[in-house]
Length: 154
Image (cartoon, helix red, strand yellow):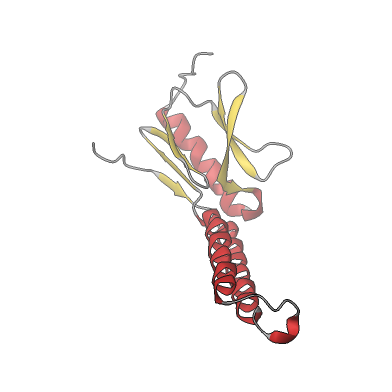
């Protein structure tokens, strides 16, 4: 199977930066507490090296979860719309998609489907300002080109 050609590939600007900063803070806290855990004047005396390693490994786990927020991406092309949020990547063909919009209250755009269904597109965030507006405009141009007047069936 050949990969589709994408006319628009959009990733959020601010979300990955915040995720990386949070990951650094999480890891620093867990390493610090892990290393300080066996100091004798901190209280409990029956903690050892395995407890230190466990706290640091928990930090690695939480850091990995925080870094999932660097993954969101929106790709648009002739085959349809591909949305990658935190973990799943899903491709929706043009006959399934009604459009892309911002909800009145929310943090990401919505990809609309028939029967009032939608999924949140974490890549297109209101906090990204002009870049997000530009991505929405570009999406609508591509939607008009590829979908035209064909509307999905309810």
